[in-house]
Length: 404
Image (cartoon, rainbow, N blue to C red; front, side, top):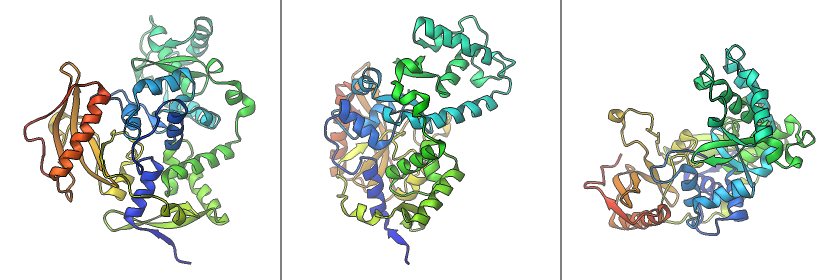
């Protein structure tokens, strides 16, 4: 039997549809509606950089222009519709997924202890009960509330003092929950005071094989097609070997089929997909032609190599690159139009002057930057300006640069 094939455009559209980028960005953005969007994405990565808006807010705004940061804060901190933990990085995750994070807690506990070569000598273990007792007696804490008189460890996790390291370990291993943030500083409390009993109790813990199955299924639902390695990397909980075995088992039952994906450069790559993947693609309408500014941490771009294969878009964030060595800028935003990534833009919110400043824009090599595109860009920047509470958009001289 011939292997199913997806041409590059169809593959891009299926992938964008999975990430809520194939439809017109509109619709309600509060409460259950916002929760449903995050459920569809799987998680929303948190990041503190605020050159325009924080990454999690940009991710949600690009899909629901009516979204405002307080909507996420309310859903997370008041409604408890989300919890915070790690996928490939810190993220807010639908609360109903919590039981499947127990495998992550277990594996993180083992891994982190192995990383802290001197964790017993430096006193970290001894602080676990002290920190838990402090929270039990006095309520939630930030890292600044614990270990005020302690010295930093010698070779501990990021060289933190013992109580701060204990806080982080207890959170990563499931004894504590993050209940929200003050500014961007996490607040911790006992898990049993935050998560309802039906989700955190021992009786709600799924068998390990059930969580592995859930992780792989949920990842595939949000990728459309994937290699076993991409499935493992999505939540960063199951191992590559576990994902590979899962694919083999589901291939044998017919639940999965191999599918050949055409890349942007004309090469092809074999992935796994649902048996009905060809039917899935028939109902996807062409994405809207408006230009949207995406967060560098948008879930559609999280896997940089996958984005490069599908869209021919090479993107690396240059925050940690010394300024003289940067090709583009400190924090440059990708631009999407329809089903194509058409360039990147260096913009920054100057809140002291109420101005969204455009320093530079680099179109992709095969993108002709027309007057019509500039008009669509101006419309998007105007939306972002209002989102950030700014008064005007200002373009630098020679802002349109040669195609990258």
